[in-house]
Every structure is written in structure tokens, then in C-alpha cells.
Image 1 (cartoon, rainbow, N blue to C red):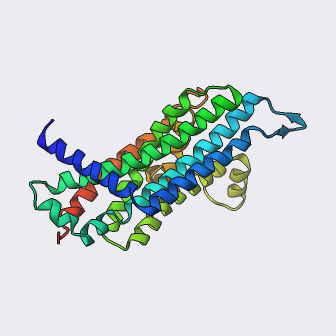
Image 2 (cartoon, one colour):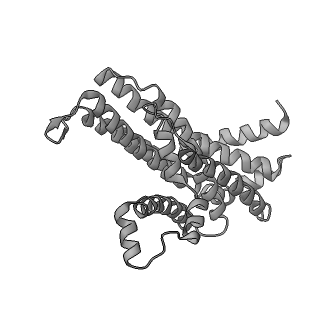
Image 3 (cartoon, one colour):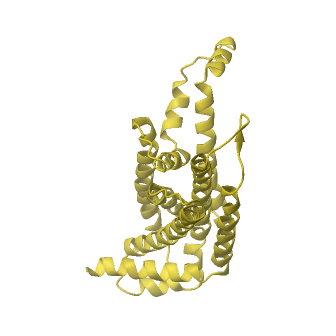
Length: 277
């Protein structure tokens, strides 16, 4: 292993151990475990649609997808919470000065921090999804093998959350960085909803009656360029029961990958300007 890679991994291991010891992380872990435990009751309820009771397979599919989305969204929020004070804590405790007194570059330090935070939050999300998978297997004797694979796809959203919060925290207070990152995710959800509604026949008829043009070019450009966090989660969830995504469903995932690269480049550029004390 090269010295550069070893330095990144050592910083990542330190970051994971440091964050995992914090009381806030332990509280988050306890709440997450409680949520999964309470979600077990959803698999034992009787669900009626149009006067007919749903079969076990339908219940598994509906509840599993819903639980998958909730866990993925909560994991992204946890990743943002864990990331918002990582640089400030190292700076206040003198850890940055100690690290940079050794032959370690800023890029290695930054990569190690981001990798450690991403790995820890991804492990938490995967463990919760695995707990749901095991619950379904034991309670209903139904296996959803692609559930864990879909969880791995959602780790891209966590990487974006970590990088974006780290970048914002270099320019504004920690809480503001967290809220701004979460605002991007909420806006992504709202934009997807508005976009879907705007293409419904009723919405098109209303727009035509109000004299609003159907093709809003500027709005569509913003919509397609905005980080597609919710769309990426929806893309991952399609694999739970073997759905085949098309190009339209695949775009949000590629969009987030590109945003991770772009945000990572901005973070590296901004961190190089930081004073280390």
C-alpha cells in the first residue's frame, strides 16, 4: 500500500472512531434501532384496499419500500449531522495542527475525513436496511435479495450530503451548513412532486386556461440540473422488487454522481485556502 493511501485510511479510521464515541452518535444509533423495532408491527397489520385484504406479498412490498425510503432519508440527515462540525472540532482541539505537522497533505486529510464520515454513515444505513431485511425474512418468511443492493446504491446520496455539508461549513456556521444541505434535499423532493403534477392532464388543462405556457424551458433546466436526491432514492428502490429502470429513472443517479465529483472539487479548492492553526 502506498504511503498516500495509508495516510488517507488512517485518517478515515480515526474519524470513524472519533465520531462513533460521541454521545450524539450513540443517541442517533439508539433512535434508529428503536425505529426498526417499531417498524416490525407494520408487517403484522391487516391492510384493506377497496374492501379486499392485501396478500402478504403486497404488504411486504409496500411496507418494505416505505421503510427503505424513510431509512435512506434519515441516514442522509445523520450523515449531514455528523459532518457539520468535523473541521471545527479538529481545529478547536488542535488535531489539525497535529496532523499537518506530519508529512500529510491537505488532500489526504480531506479525503480521509470525507471517506471516514461516508463509510460510517453508510454502515449505519446498511445495518438498518439489513435489520429490515432480516425482519421480513423471519416474520413473513419472504426474502427480498435486492433490498441490500438498493441500500448500497443509496450511499451515493450520503456521499453528497457529507461533501456538501463539509463545503458549506467552511463558509458559514455549522447549523446553517446543515440546514442548507437539508434544504437542497427538501427542494429536490418538492421539485419532483411539482414536475410530476405539472405533467398530469388536469394540471395541463389548468395551465392552458390560465394562459401559462406548457413548456417552461427555464424551469426544466433548473429541474434537470438540480441535485436529484429524491430521484436517486427512487431509482434505488426500483430494484427492490425487480423493476427495470429506464433512462429517465437512471438520470437522477448519474446526476448525483456528477454532483459528488463537482462538490468534491469545490471542497478541495476551498479547503486549500483555509488557515491551519
